[in-house]
Image 1 (cartoon, rainbow, N blue to C red):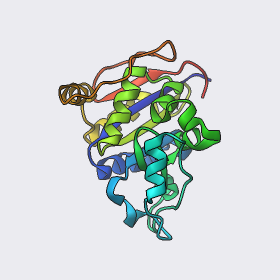
Image 2 (cartoon, helix red, strand yellow):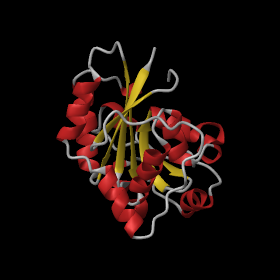
Image 3 (cartoon, rainbow, N blue to C red):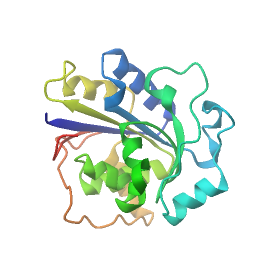
Length: 214
């Protein structure tokens, strides 16, 4: 069954997590939602159990591109739904993050984080354009939180409703952000010949047609 990937980047984790909570409240299953949030400076330490904090090893693994680190913890009691599975990993080229959902399995499975280009590789595999995938990765690296949702054509909750929910919680304009980063010297990798699907809209929330069933 064909599926779309819908994405939104947030400056604040709290806005992204509120969007995830609303998605779950209207019936989007946990298995179709993912959240990836920057954890530089151990900013999410209070959300993880068992003293699972960022370590020098985790940061080094992310910086040298040796692969995604293992999940180190889950959120402190009180979280529900998708965010109850939040864990700490290291993503090559992005750094230490807290993450939950379907994208995590792609990032941590069999070294694919390094082999497929980390977060950008996982996103392009889900149908996101290469240009946007690298911009989302840079957004997370700079402190943002990315929410991705997979929606099948026959899903009871339509893609338009998902888009409205994500919009309601204040995502950033990816094009504006990317332009500002380029002005500061950021150079995104040139798109290759892989998955380069175009977003259905070029606003704050973007929907991409899946190239294959996910």
